[in-house]
Amino acid sequence: MLDKKNIIQGTETAVIVGVVTKDQTEQQVVEYLDELAFLAETAGAETKKRFIQKLQHPDTRTFVGKGKLEEIRQYAIAHQVNLVIFDDELSGAQINNITTAIGVKTIDRSDLILDIFARRAKTAEAKAQVELAQYQYILPRLRGMWKHLERLGGGIGTRGPGETEIETDRRIVREKISLLRNRLKEIDKQSATQRKNRGEFIRVALVGYTNVGKSTIMNLLSKRDVFAENKLFATLDTTTSKVVFENTPFLLSDTVGFIRKLPHHLIESFKSTLDEVREADILIHVIDISHPQYEDQMAVVNKTLQELKAFDKPMITVFNKMDLYEQQTFDEWLGEDTKKEILQDLYDRWNHETGGNAVFVAATERRNVEGLRATILNKVKELYQVRYPYKTMFF
Image 1 (cartoon, rainbow, N blue to C red):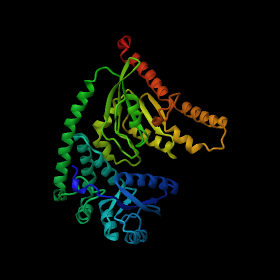
Image 2 (cartoon, helix red, strand yellow):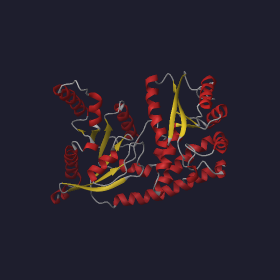
Image 3 (cartoon, rainbow, N blue to C red):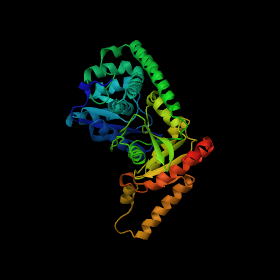
Image 4 (cartoon, rainbow, N blue to C red):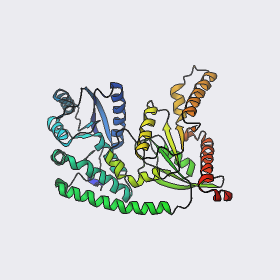
């Protein structure tokens, strides 16, 4: 799927664009653009400037209107920008119109996320899942995109199936989609068989927004070396390990992170990966409490879990990066008693809202890892008593 000659050589320079409509505030758009800039950085692009346009609704032809487009064009020429990224999904016609007007490669948020997924995909399953999502994204945009891609070549947003002549034919794209779906069905059958063959173990899955520290916590709990870094979507493939706490075994899985405006094609394509979430007995929802919008991120994850019909499972809520939270919240003039009071208010609030199922950790410092282990162990033991009571005598 990945064409090595189109992997980014060096850094692309980009501007990012958001639109404030009647449905969202300017503050929300600023937050979305913060995340878009992080996505761009993850993909290898350096964000030079942000453009925000206020409209009742997006322009059907150019999304932001001719005036704002001319402003972007002039900036792109003056600062040698070679990529424009829109925070919202664009149609093929809009991409073509914008690219024609400003003469710079244009992609949207979905295209950027797909590009990152294409870069991160390592296994045959992940590559097939990403490729399917890319073709599904491309199909309704064929008329607007192929001219654009043919003229502008490789780089962010053009990795994967957007690089050969064969995709100009809708019929062949549909055949590709059908072929990939059949391949993923076979992989899904194999994955389902593997899950069934795991025996009568309680299954625990780590879920959460991307880049909240799930893989770091996975490494601490399972003593495995799962790839983790401070970038979005560091891992795509589900990693499952058998873990034993105090003679009590269970299966622990690390899953792909969620994000705002996640392309629905990806959710469909990653069905077999997300089945680890659907079939889990216990969910561990990991949250980056140091993030300014951590509550919004929690809401995004909870909404995605509802869409996956997995929200009603027993859940442990883990507030990670407490060390960073304290650095941001406390200054040198605060007394120790005041600090303790602030932390206690935080603990009380979230223990109340989670029914006593909140744990506060700093994974990189290994702070309160033992408390997290004890919480997980208690949940696992409770479920063994309900599901497989005859096995508990052996633990």
